Length: 389
Image 1 (cartoon, one colour):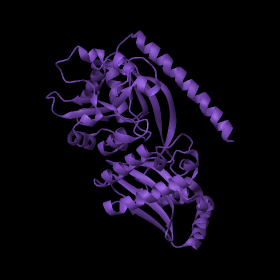
Image 2 (image 1 turned 60 degrees about the horizontal axis):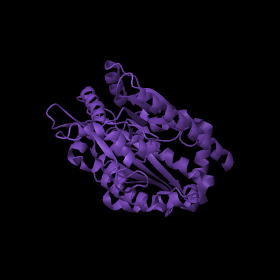
Image 3 (image 1 turned 90 degrees about the vertical axis):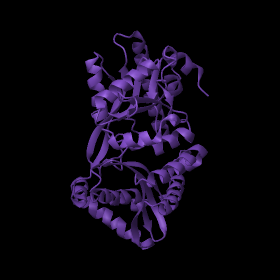
Image 4 (image 1 turned 120 degrees about the vertical axis):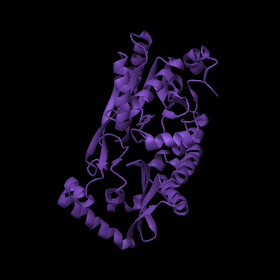
């Protein structure tokens, strides 16, 4: 069902072009072959906007269904050169103003897909599609502020006399996988910390031989995924009711997306076992030469052995040994206590307001509304942190 505020604030402009192809279309209407081809040519990797992932999210994931898309085609109107999944500002935050917001793909990265052979043309067309859809602004959540996609958009905005506004930002951990894994870990953690972790690893072996496993094939990935879901639900996420398997739509999404991406070697599940018991597991997406560490689940009965850290050490070695991977995005929150000490690379992630017209008073209203919303969210987070102490 399309919300009435979305109809009122976004669709009027497209009505003026009733004979033309719509500027904003249902995400499921995007040709998946074209989408996959664009992803292969994308100027900046984003595993969360691969079609098998984002279509599964939009189909069933709680609070993330029924996304639309702004598609950009080249001059012949036959080749897809840009794609930005979106929802209305009303749908995102109940703000009745004419803006589109990047559809959140369950992972914390929403950088749009732009063709590396025509990034400026793609950026130009995406912004024009948003205008044709009736939007006065785009709100890009969780974009790499210094990434190639954002730089292309900024270049077009600068040409048009427009300037993006950063609503919020933070620094996120990443891995330079071109380095030797052992050297990287020694430099990051130091000899003393690594010695302590090796001691914990030896103690974990008292419960059975410790093995690091990587599931890739269709036969392996299903079993590994169910192990991951059980581990995630057994820990603090399960206690808070935020584990994937606790929500039917989320469980359906992940069980659809992971096997589909595994078929194209774009997803793997890593597991640490002690004997026959899985003690930690993580889902890793792959897009071009970048990996994305989606989620981690651990068996908290083994918490004193640091199973999440042990798994991440093995994952680091695994990615550094893979010549196809140059970097990995932790997709973690700022100052994440587990990943930040291990993956010492850093890059800026932020939410960005992009005006679509110069000197537009409506954009001023949208900006003020979003700043107020951010302030309210920050206050709420502080209260929640105090209550959890």
